[in-house]
Length: 175
View 1 (cartoon, helix red, strand yellow):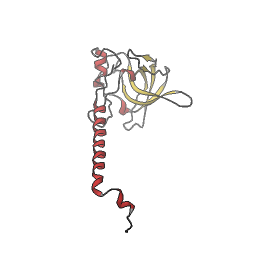
View 2 (cartoon, helix red, strand yellow):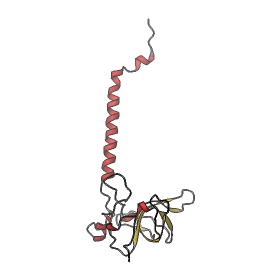
View 3 (tube, one colour):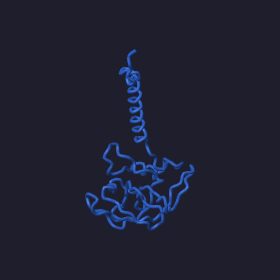
View 4 (cartoon, helix red, strand yellow):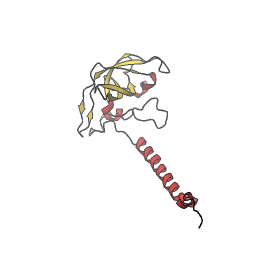
């Protein structure tokens, strides 16, 4: 009786092809699914708001100015838009001289579909780089500057803070 090497008894080389095929197809599915989700239009007023209003249409034209991958991502939705006042302009080309803005309307908003825009205290200041400022050609039909950002919360203290700035929409000169 000859001894059998336990490694030989598992699978022969050709039997592993089905596993590699499944893994490759799963990887393709993840990549395609991610591309679809990232390219899906992020309606600015997606929370049961009127998509035909002038404000909604304007929000839907705003793209992240420093997004390197075309098509550029939208700045996000109305649920991420906060009215701000720009305290100091960002003048550095590499973010070396950051701008400062102050939230003027950080109220929590309850949308018609049940989602909530988290509130942040008025007067909260944050820094932003020049690369986050949208070009003046994007326009601004409102009477305020805007910032699109995410609010995060510290786990222990539950203190809210601005975690990531996507876009800063300034007022046109002379406004």
